[in-house]
Image (cartoon, rainbow, N blue to C red; front, top):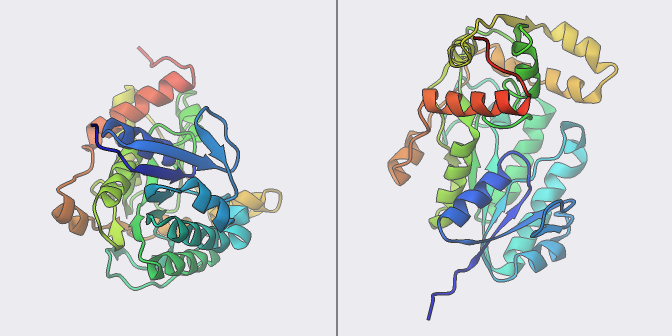
Length: 304
């Protein structure tokens, strides 16, 4: 008789959740996806703050992956209650929890690893500390990633606006100082890291696979070579973001985090590599896949 595969449940279907599902299926795992509003066959609608709803969805599951990330403007209201609902629901289902996290809790720390002190300098960083405490106290494995890039319109720097501008011959917009070293995480690598945490019985904080830090200007140069065009760089000043934030609460929240591009922002993933033997996708391959997606998605043709 075939061996019964325990279910893996993914909560959240933004940039990372679907990639986690794809990679788990490729490794022969059964997958169930829960999100606030189901949009595809096989997805389930639920409010992840409701521990009972999470427990029902995770009934019979081996691992639950927390990939939910509300809008910046909703963090004060939702971030910690979401963590509590998922933690309690996962516990009731008897499953292990793997959670995706970011680096906002490290504040002014220029070089980050799992042992770096938590020194948040923003309200969002403080909220991330509180949410992580809820999950870590429950024995979760928490994977932390740097700023995303990849085949997604939502990436902070290299998302929809980046492709729309550079394919129209305009300069790429960046925050802070484009010549400061900055770590970026390729979204399929983030998903692969979460899958490793899910398939292994580990706990605590892990820095997920991340590409070697480079100045953002240098990363944009990689995109330029892959797209066979020159791409200028324009740093958006904080005063402009604050002015735009008068009319856009979301942009006002973004302005709070731009300090990350005004100082070195370097992540050390050596603990993860040593434990799992997993390295990030090489820069050239990650950029090529991202560019292919961006050009295809936005209906432009590369210059001859």
